[in-house]
Image 1 (tube, one colour):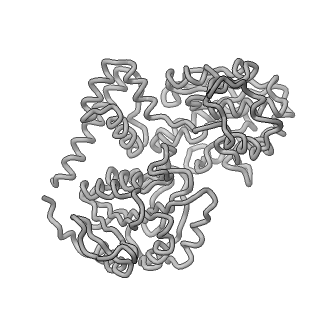
Image 2 (cartoon, one colour):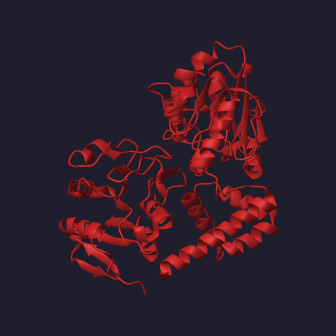
Image 3 (cartoon, rainbow over the protein chains, first blue to last red):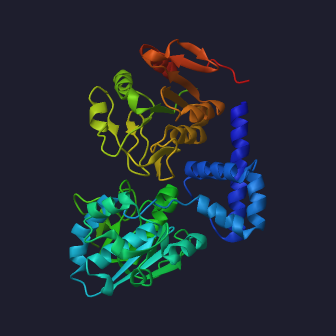
Amino acid sequence: MSAGASVAALEALEADLLLEGVARHWGFDLRSHSRPQLLRRLRRHLREERLESFSALQARVLHDGEALEGLLRALSSTPPGLFSDAAFFRDFRTRVVPVLRTWPSVRVWHAGCGTGEDTYALAILLHEEGLWSRCRLYASDASEGLLADARTGVLPLPGEDDARRHAESGGRGSLSDSYTRDGNWALLHPRLRDGIFFTQHNLTIDGSFNEFHVIVCRDTLLSFNRALHNRVHSRLYESLARFGFLCLGRKESVARTPHVAAYEELEGSGRMFRRVS
Amino acid sequence: MSVGLLVVGAPRSAGADVETLLSQLPAQLPAPVVIVLHRGPHDVLAAPLARRCALPVVEPDDKEDLVPGRVYLAPWGYHLLVDRGCVALSVESPEHGCRPAIDALFESAADSYGAAAAGLLFSGHDDGQEGLSFLRGRGGRVAVVMGESDGGEGQEGEVERLSLSEVGGWLTRLAYVPRGRVQP
């Protein structure tokens, strides 16, 4: 075996042992995550923690719950600001909101909310469209640490870019109406923050917990491998009411999942699907 | 050992060179080609790059299969990683200010394909150098394509340096000749 291959084999073994340990001790099963992405994030986490090897990280993570939270945080991705994908929110306003208006009550699930930026944006949008009083917005993530951040309703003060993207998304009025400023921070208006139900839910192991009219799950499933990605899609399908909407990331699709036949893509939208059967 | 994957990284300034490279790819290439070309949100690249290329050029969705004889171009806003025969897009933070980043692709190619991956880096940007040496360390065959202003060819350290006109020959050797270099 060449030197490069034996280094790779040893590293792969250490990574397997780390993931096995985290799964058995903490119940977080990362073994079905997309392998190359996981390895990259683990390597970066090692550098930041100044550790030599995955074995050293394993020792730390098994004995220290905070180290585990640090690891889960390192493996997560949250968009950097409000309305980070303006096109999605614009399409949501023009394609989904008109249908929601015709329904007496709407349950929305944001799966994989991270620290909540997109959840807040969704709440602001629903409020601006006059739907907030009949919406229940559930936001879930596997990591309690990220959820704790999300629950605060505090985020870095939105800048000009955020305001511009809000306007591009079809925002009515000023973005600053939705928060109060506190120095360099913004506190989401309590009428929005208190109407969001943040809940710990691990897409990889937890079952469906309600039936929803809208499920927003954008770029969250990118970190799973194909088998897990398809399993989670089954869960999303079970959780979505007939004629409900599934909103995925710009480069995600139901095409390679078992439920492709059950959805119709809204033409010209950024990957919004409607469950038709 | 034949090549199972060709990864190509190029900064924005090398866009025309990438087009030239694509025009030299044989129509019966036995491996998928995956390209990261630095780009902004409004750059339209797939159609222009496909003009002179014998192979189909696509911007893949997440989890799409990697099929030999097709060219996969990283979409804007995502890192493009390869995961044993399929595409894995990622929204990790930008590297060297870039997303897609070349380092991300090369690192994943080293992890997934090891010595079966070949990497070609167009010079002119910091992004890609680390990934290229990582891939080389895992046994992948790599080379740097120098711009006209970068001067000489030959070896820089251990990494092979090519001019644009030599890339065609390099690709041919890649496809048909067994590996010559012995690992230390």
